Image (cartoon, rainbow, N blue to C red):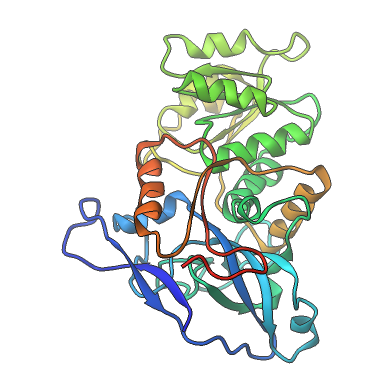
Amino acid sequence: MPTAITIRQVPGKPGQVYYPLEHMQLLEPSPKGDEVVVKITAAALNHRDLFLRQHLYPGTTFGVPLLADGTGIVTATGSSPEAKKWQGKKVVINPGSGWKDDPEGPEAAKGYAILGGTKANPLGTLGETVTIGASELEEAPSHLSSVEAAALPLTGLTAWRAVMTKSGNAKPGRNILITGIGGGVALMALLFASAAGANVFVSSGSQEKLQKAKALGAAGGVNYKEEGWEKKLMAQMPAERKMLDAIIDGAGGDIVGQGAKMLRPGGTIVVYGMTQGPKMPFLMSAVLKNIDIRGSTMGSRKEFADMVKFVETKHLKPVISRTVRGLNNLDGIDSLFEDMKSGSQFGKLVIEVSQEGGSSKL
């Protein structure tokens, strides 16, 4: 029987507990009419997976494989023509369900159901196989390795919606600030905005991460730990456009107050996360400048397809921070979670589950 990794329940309060990883057995795959079996070659972590282990994520449960990011090879299909066309193809998996194409949000009555570790969806990608509807697949961009392709789905989709759908400023000559560079979403946002022709600026508490971001195409950057970093950033703006058009932010905190000083009138702040706390003040200074604050999370099935096509067309590559091999390597997988805890990663943290055309790395 195929194996996967889940979390094991131990006593503890949310935020204080840290659920250990454990192996679980999956049922032998038996795809129905429009389903396919994907042999997972690689899967990647997101911050939500750390929150699940800390019981800080809605619907945290046990006995469901972890992780929403995955790539692999279709090894079996159901009887429908839609399913059969995927046989043998290298694919990336849409990381959630319940959201087809409405630009405002999920159409499903129960909302968007992300893969991995919750009661909302019984599937996850940290296993040898996953059996899923054929409609949830996209062919993996041909220039990506399995490790790179696994790094794409959730962060790529989140960044795509924030930058391309919500900001309205992924255009040539526009100035976009991406905060907290180093995480998966922020890095994909940098790649997308830069490929769309925008001038991309970044912030980080690490000078090393700022230098790496510039090597990836950032036009400039600032260390937010330094006094007066906002003025230092504004000094880097191009002469013909001296203010920001948009900010893509995953921290929250004082971003509205800071943004009101740097954004042009009518500028946009897109918030896809609030790691500094669940509240964020909206100030009169932002109102007077007609600044828009737009929440953004994940994305639709259509946006996923658009994102994968853009990655293929532009030959973009997700940034990989570190990779470990094997589902039996619980210590190695745990070490990836430790990277995420400490914030030391620059890019995605990936588990190589099996080799393309080879056996599982158990």
